[in-house]
Image (cartoon, rainbow, N blue to C red; front, side, top):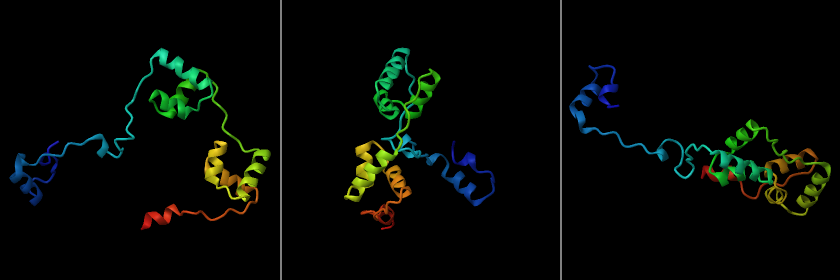
Length: 153
């Protein structure tokens, strides 16, 4: 839409300026990278064919996570779970931290491992490891790097 067409008060100084400039004002072309989504993260919608859908289900059943399947097929993780539920495929249960695993996490943490390292080793989120350790009474160390302080500088 042209700028002059968007002015509601035709007698304002701004409207006069727009009339004077006329067609010389060209709006910049808007690319997807300028609309809030970085170009590297933009993912166009993609529909799977019946064969791709069957292959996706097989890959998921082989033990891959929804995130891994999504990356493999070039679709969103939520699309994977939605399609699995739609086709009656039971989803993998989320990882839970039982008493045995908690004892093992606490043992490693007390010997210097970080929550991030433990999360990677046991395929858990670092925040989940930290919450479980804190809930069990383990005194957590202060972080080595404060990511919030780094943003303010």
